[in-house]
Image 1 (cartoon, rainbow, N blue to C red):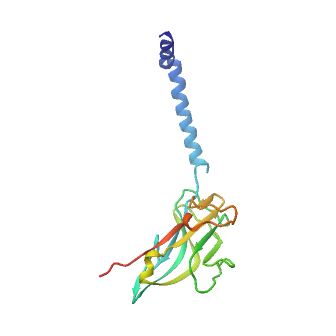
Image 2 (image 1 turned 120 degrees about the horizontal axis):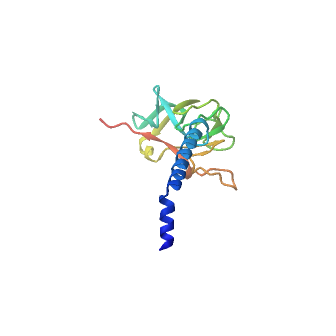
Image 3 (image 1 turned 30 degrees about the horizontal axis):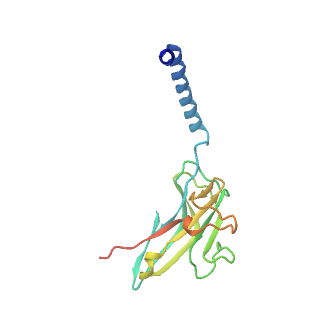
Length: 187
């Protein structure tokens, strides 16, 4: 019983209260300064979007064309984070089916397009990739199609689930993010 009385007096004593609350205030101020003036808590957060008809979109808007859907768009990288990603600080990888190789095609890897991030991507902004794509897809195939992608940067992989297989050096499609298709509503 005497032990509880000693602990109670210690915790409720003036000296303890002053020390406790002053350390909380100092810790909060140091945390605020570190957050505001350093990059310790800041990082980029990348995703692929498409630029279509002058607007950035998270999905590819398809238009009906007889038995097919079609779309024309440009790929772009969006930084949803709170830190810029500078030019040369990473690579982008897209797995999009093309009829002929592009300037970004990976040698001997089917449908793998990649490139170095060639400009700074500021927080809440976009960087256009010089890869314009024209897509024609059969209406019955559209539900099972999407475009996988990932980023490998100085700050890690995006999405975080995209891990390199230590044996092959590949990232599995199931671990990537996807750009999905948006089907127009029937009138």
